[in-house]
Image (cartoon, rainbow, N blue to C red; front, side, top):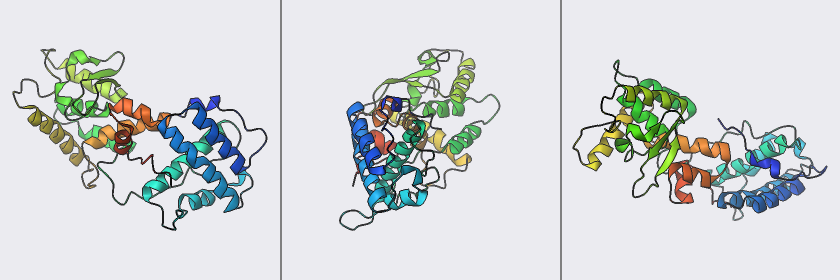
Length: 303
């Protein structure tokens, strides 16, 4: 559900040239100078490599003539030592190519995008939970509806969609939910920064239903009145999400975990902004490496 990138219109046109090496080298240079976040520097270094490969290895003299096969050949190209690229490296290369062609198409420099149907396999060893897909999020929402009038599971899922960790979910109160603005204050943990996080449209409605059923608005949204230790409350939140995932038919994939919902939210930010620093802010992540790992993107692997 990427909404496009607002920043590219600041990048200058490349004249009449559609030479892969000239255009992509210039794009990488402009990207490095205009947006010097660590992610964009990493991305900028890949673009000249793509241009050089298209011209010298694939004999593509005009970007408008680049095909999916040409881009895939670069994505799968061996490393300098002859080894096959890891899945992470291939995904980074594909991300760079997608960014470049989307940007160039927006500016009218090319008329097509050969990366649209470029599909890669899952990582061989996925670190942690993978983000849910949009379709899986919809399935989870549907599974969160249980007995008539029971709004707890919907509320827990809605907070997870708003990037809340299972440590944060048990402590959110109605006063920290802004149904008008569609946001929630999340208090953070030792490893996660506190933040104001946007709710999804579905999440707003789910929390509205939950709050409406609460007589004492000073209590927490979920597990109110529990004298359990913090670890027990965290475990209860994880259990509710795990049960919802199981009933949605998503538990057969070992990479799907309660944190997959939060990872989905982070991935939405990345698809919209193409910036890992924005993902880190949204997730309350204290490092860019951690934010990249949550959404499954190895942004520092530039080989």
